[in-house]
Every structure is written in C-alpha cells, then in structure tokens.
Image 1: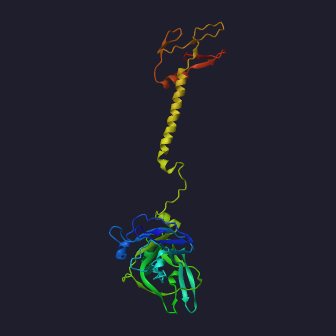
Image 2: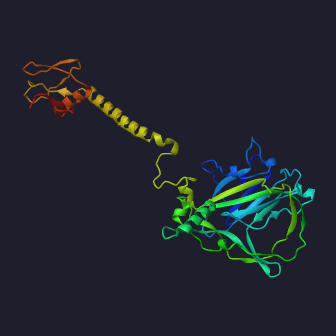
Length: 366
C-alpha cells in the first residue's frame, strides 16, 4: 500500500486480479510533484508535497481497481469527509467517490474504504452496466505512421502507463434530488490503440489501460457537496506506474534474474578467485611435504667393490654435507642445490629391491 509518512491515516492500494499489487520504489526521485498544486495545510517546507510514487506490475487482460482507506487517526480539520477521483493514462474517470456519512461525527471515529473498480455506462431510466478496468496489450507500430499522428501520439505517450488517485477534503454533502442522469465511457478506453515506436522514445511500454466487458450494475447515488478548498486542490496524490514484467526489467525497477547464477553466495562472489589460489597453495604444501619425506629417507647403497660371493652388502648413506662414496675413483660428492634439485638427482639413480626388503641404489653413471 502507498502511504505518505506525514499524512497519517490515509493510504491507497491498487489491486490486480483481486490481490494487492506488489509496489516498487522508483530508481530516481520524481520531479512531477513540483508542477502540482496542493492545499497549503497539507504541505510544508519540512515535509514537502503530499505525493508518493510506486511502480507495479501489469498483467495482460487482468482486471484492477483502486482502493483508498481512511483510518481513525486521519485529521479532518474543518472538513467533514474526503473524496477521491481516479485517472488512467491521463484520462480522468468521471465521478467523485465520497464518504456518505458527511455530518456524522461518529462516522469519523470509524475506518472507511473507498474504491473505484471501473466505468459506469447507461442511465437511471434504462439501467447501468459497469465496465471494469483491465490491462491490455499495446500494439506498437515501427513505421508508416503519419507525422501528424506521431505528434499526437507523443503527447499521449507522456501519460501512458500512469495511474493516479487524487484525494480531496470536502464539506458537508446532501443527497441530490435529481433522478435522471446518464453516462458514457470514454471511447478511447474501449478501442484497440496503436502507438508508434518513435512516439514512445525508448520507454519500456507494451501495455495500456482498457475496459472489460460490461456487467449489470445497480448504478450509484449522487450527492451535492462543497469543497473545503475553493480552489479544489488535492490534499494528496498517489501515483502508480504500471509496467509489464519485461518493462520492469528494462527500466531497472527490479533486477533481471541470472540465467547462470554463480555457485558462490552474492556476498562471497569476490572471494571465489581467492579460494582458487588457496587450493593451489594447498597442493604446493602437500607436494613440499612429500618431497621432504623423500629427502629424509635413508636408502641403502651397494658399493662398487661389494662382495661378489653372493652376499648382499649395504651401507647407510651419511647425512653429513659431504659424502664420500665407496667407488674406486675416490671422487667426493657434495649435496648441493635446493630440495627440488636434490630430489631430481635422487630420481635419476637406479634402484633394485633386495631379498631382505632393503633397496639397492646404483650410483654409477651410465
């Protein structure tokens, strides 16, 4: 429901297909209220103008209606009641919906709801039908529109996609003694209108307001009322801009869902590369641990002048920095280089497993 924080006790809701429409805040502040006139009692320098704007989703061929709710903490001041009028796509809907218990002060201690669900057609003599509001598709034409029609459509497009509810402070109302009256709906609401793509100027509009099939209705009662403000200025304006689901995506009112969502939560998406690096670091640590185990292992080495009588002789390799091999040439061998280099040198030696489970390594060069 749309509310104005400093205007207590008054709220307006648009119901689509019988359910309150989900409301979305505009992406940027709206400047339209600067052009509207309001009663000086209902606006101030600190609070601003009594205006609120929300976006809602329009569903094709779905009926919708306006609902205003006045609670007991609403300040009437000198007036007796409130009234509302509705406007769709820049066209005012005839008829002022008012509270009918005008002079009854006890009525002001109760909650009141006003609604506008459609347009009445007919007469008091011949009967009435109500054509409900509904959303319909907008036929968009790319080319072939005369320049004159394009200019007219540009003016129409400025109000397309707008629903407004105007609230007024009223004085005392009395029943109207006039018995005969009639009304006809705006033909434009019944026609299947087309709009040139040029007239839309890139706006994400693909639907409009139309009227559904009329159903029998009892009509309405008329009252004579007075305006608390002689200038007939609004005490508040509630505006709703309707868009299709695709239109809400295009105008960035709601985020478009991702087709391939990230496997990481939204707050951890930036940490994904770090996790990858950590995984490689873990593999490097494991590799170094395995390399260290290889370097700490003490193999048994068979000297070149070993007993040829069939006995398997073996000696342990000294772990001191300098190792003197048992070869006949008396060459001293020094361990040098990094752990990786030393591991690579050990990997080039010839190994043979002995019968007693020990391993023989041949140090002779090929």
